[in-house]
Length: 113
Length: 142
Image 1 (cartoon, rainbow over the protein chains, first blue to last red):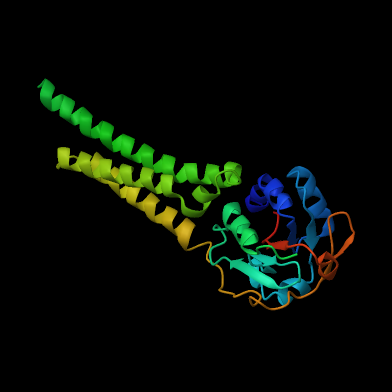
Image 2: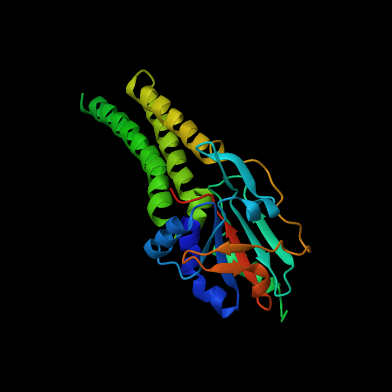
């Protein structure tokens, strides 16, 4: 949650670089609608209740919360051609990449169209 | 004897301040995490100011014990400080540890998906070609 708010604070920086942000979570659409309203997020939150996408990215955390499977905290940066260029998967859910680190990774994509 | 009295006051004061510093470090961390983490992400990640407060608190308790080696209060407070520091370390470095995962391979094609956004619109990754995309997987909102 704080990570999403932090990204929102840096949203202009991502926008300037033409980089779009999407949150992905097991929560249902309604929960995400409320979160986007409450946290005034300007990027979408995608709902993956069946963990299909979370599995495709290898990020399932079994019994992660109250016996429920959830996503591991992770950031995945994909370039304009759909290639994975940078990832950050945390071993400690308290620790997330700083927006500055993520922006540096976006900058490192270089002048790809 | 005024000198002895002031030394006694001194060690008590130090011991109490030591506990207050440790409490400020620990409670301050959770205030940051719950209220201000978005603005202070490096404090959330590394808790450096909080550990400085905890270390200062432990140092003061040890100083208080050296000033009054026979007094009990500073020793009890040092014990409380140490317990708090250990609990703090557990909350930071043990409880939040999650299983290791590598995530998608670098240089590989990102797996496509079609998911509903918060308004119920389908978002397809393959429709987003032409610009970089940052996917932020997170645990949930509860």
